Length: 180
Image 1 (cartoon, rainbow, N blue to C red):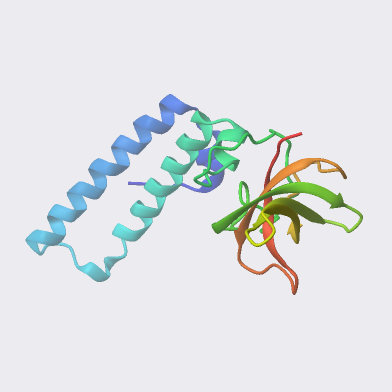
Image 2 (cartoon, rainbow, N blue to C red):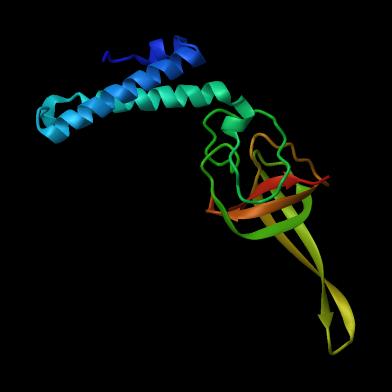
């Protein structure tokens, strides 16, 4: 029942880590039994370090099993194709790698302006029917959307943007897919 440091956990290979995890779990089980019997005081401070060791070992095992792109890309709930380009470090306004949640409307359109850093202007044209004249007219909608660092967007591209929390005064959408 020796407390393990993070450095020693990182140095162990997968098989040794699984063996050590089994040993620590049996020690924790024994301590639980002692605490239920009343022979171990709760203030002894032996349970919490064992739980932390187990959490560290499980985290390291998961890191060993998965590749970078599987660990770092999260499911946003929409079937989109994500390019496996590495994002900027600590970018929180990224639905795939950061903590930005998407909800609400989807907006498909053409990029008409990509001059600002990290922001684009998307325009959608849709026909509207005037029943009085029995004709169609054109309607244009423009929005501003944030571009995550792992997507490359240029003017003229057809993109899909999803609604998110307000990122700035005029930006409440984030680009999730570049179609062309």
